[in-house]
Image (tube, rainbow, N blue to C red; front, top):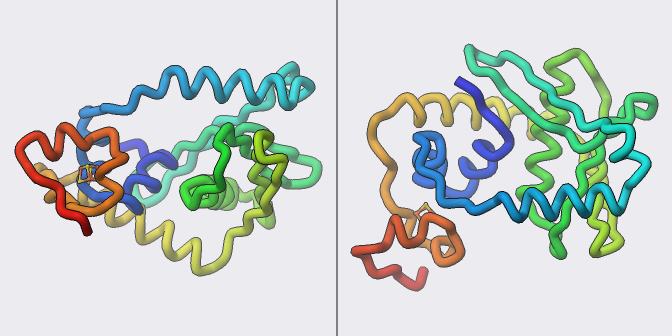
Length: 180
Ligand code: SF4
């Protein structure tokens, strides 16, 4: 079983979304987004794009392969750089970088920090991995593992975030969403 930062993010948002995604039911139309992100990366940081320093990292944890793709790792300063095309700071971005920091630790790279870069906002945020974060990530992996072992799709969330979720039509084609 492979687990990525997307799984961790969906775990935080909605167990049903995580289950659907993990069972191959995908509604995200990300190709344009991914392409735009790549363009933004290359135009914002041409020297990095030329050196092609994107780093694929993996680690085994409790029988699961954890995988991350780091935009740029500055090995000299022990800093992960993650570049976001978004024009707003999101909790999911921070979670993603913390997941990468944990992956580095599992590979024996201690004391790394993260930098979340928002070229559109001209903003950079520092990200650190705390003991509490480690505990939460370990718990997340364990819950995700048992959820994905299950044949039962979790129930509909019935929350406001459903309205902007790519699975909305799938989940609510015969349901009325509440205003919770
Ligand atoms: S629409 Fe709501 S219940 Fe369905 S996957 Fe998305 S967040 Fe979860």
